[in-house]
Length: 311
Image (cartoon, rainbow, N blue to C red):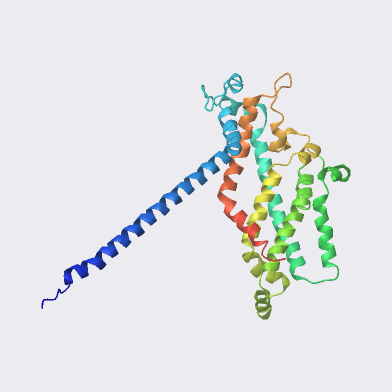
């Protein structure tokens, strides 16, 4: 009697065929997932591009219009690029105003106030975070109330004080008011929240090594607080750079003006704005600060994120 013996070749081919089919199915599934992922990324970036237009277009229009003659700025339909680009508005900026001196005024005031705010806020924030004394929370609440008081409320009494001291038409009122004003209060809050999040063991180890309170603040807390200090520096610099009310009240001489105050002085003989010259001055005022923020925005976001860890 003859029995059929299954072929070993066919039994070996079946698992191999099954494996090939499984690999094909997996590869097809991975391709489909990749396509869906690519479509999601494309849709996401397209949506972000559309949402960025209202923010990017005014800056683009400011920069391109600064190279246009006045009549071309208001031409219809508007042009995205200047038909006849000219640098004359940029030359007029320095001819009509001491713009170089005004630019220097804004830079050095912003730098001095930023450094002063970083020093004051780090000292005050460390004291509120680490030094326990009666009424500390109540005093900190009083400090925070300073954020609720508009600058317009205190501008008249401050003007009278500085006028009695003979400091009107100098940069001292702007430096002092902004260093110890609302920006410093917000900076103190940020630094306090950051110092609260630092491990107490670091200070205990430093105290064992013989460091005092000031040494711990300078050698331990400050090097670790670089992200928070970067955030304080960026928003303080931007705030001081854009100050308009205080320079308008305290400064009288064009040689002492800051940039926001100087931008309003580019007018023709009839008091009308010289649009292309104003846009050229605004471009030179805004673009450097915008570039600084773009470069340092990572440190800014990181510093604000660290302040919310605890407290």
